[in-house]
Image (cartoon, rainbow, N blue to C red; front, side, top):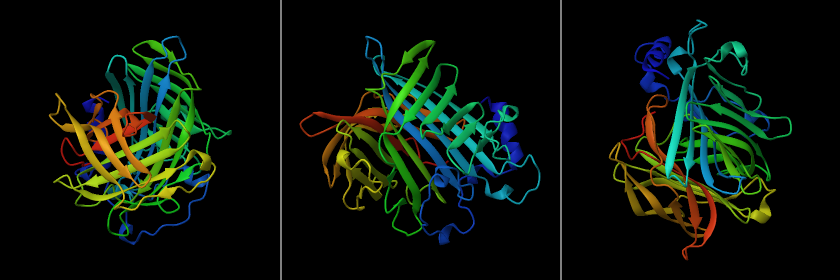
Length: 379
């Protein structure tokens, strides 16, 4: 979005409200977990301050090259607290933001774009008359930010349609396993205080069908060798007050297992909180995973990449200790830093990576996300 359009959008919100777009909604300190119900909780939760649907994965080309590509697609919804009591149809009560990226492993390059829009004021998510706005259904997964969209079909698969200047995605994601409830039945702690938590579920091991487009090239996915990971998370605050960012991995293993691990860091790089989960491939039809305690996950950086753009230093190879083993996470491309200051306001590193054992054997692939290295995360 051009700067003029961004300024116009913020003008609809009101003066001085943009820095608190991710502030807590009323009653956040009294938030208590409730049981998740589906498909309703696949949809939006507009009474919560922040929410995102996040899909990452790897595509292996169906042609003779068998080239590898990573992709990331995220839709954000943010509740704008100061506008909630306004009656104007133009009042932006929700903001929608979206990021999309393709990593070309052979060329060692990242291509990315972003979108920003105010709410449409209704759940008419795919109305052709409101493609300059954003919307999300509260009944099921159907979210749009301008002309980008993610929707769950009647057969349970997800369909993503993204078109930007250099990249495009026309992909469907077919579940092969039960969804996975993170934390305790979907209530995932993110800090030492009881309310520092989020509702969080995952759909790992999604089969990927369709195509990517990269600078005019069409790349058809090989469904047998292409896998994705979906996270849906919503909460009343982005992270604890003393945290500046986080490190997170979501890994699809070749044997069907799924590994999540994360830590939130303070300004000195110390872990404020940690967690994650493990579900073995043979338990793929069980919704609940084995949840990690905050003391059971340890991230240790092994190699650092210096961004020539921001000067941030990102660990691109990690040792990750969990109750299910010691793993090495290795980025397949070092330069996977994303500048989203034209939408969420953040600079972060998000990239395709391999999961290896300590002998160097590749166990699976997934995504590594790191925030707070180019300055404290302030969305």
